[in-house]
Length: 328
Image (cartoon, rainbow, N blue to C red; front, side, top):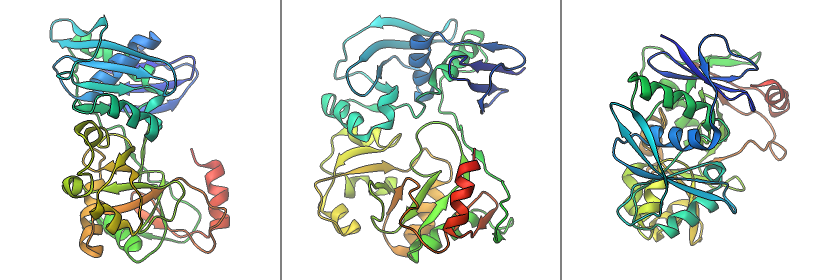
């Protein structure tokens, strides 16, 4: 059985056939599809991706003025239930969603508001209503239940540039080669997988030191105590989902060779392939932090290694600017 959730306003489409797949933007999908009840389905989708069965407080926020908190729970016989606006207590699991997810500063404000709460942040923003309406229908029919879903797809595009294929017999060969290039001081573009929502790893430039402005620092989950010791629980939990502006330790400042009281940080663990990359990278460079930034090529010259799922392309920057214009 294949079902889909479609947002007719923005066109986002999710398809389910025992697993979820983001199908991009379409005007009118074929087959059985469901249109979202926008606000409710944002809360439902975020709760589903939170990966827990127990009740939680789901807060939708625009990251500026508006915030709506709803108590949400799951029951096997009736699916995901919304129980109305509710204040957040110190014992509540908090799930944050909406446009706020794409702002490290706005997420940090909620972390300060609920410092002792376990907190997760939904990576989907504009795509969330479409996902939520599909998740609601699946849970109501007993076909699925709240869980963390992998929404990334391998990128096997072949570009018209010089390339080198990875060794299929070596598990993680692509991540190892990308880690090696970064450890040597190269700036690379990670296009190995694609997916919807907020991602500090895929669709980003990676570098050994803070080369970008602004920079997101990706750290190994094993280094949380070492690098984020001043940060309360909510910061550490939220940073496992999306980049968050966090207080950082002296050990972190020493690792990035920069004197700053706080930094935008993302913690590995939930993104497929990221732990493999950091394992190789940590072995090569001896530290568990790498810089990540948006694609800004104006100041770059020469070649830019572009890592796909099964090969690395090596176009010059001028050619790659043209690729970015046509890349989905």
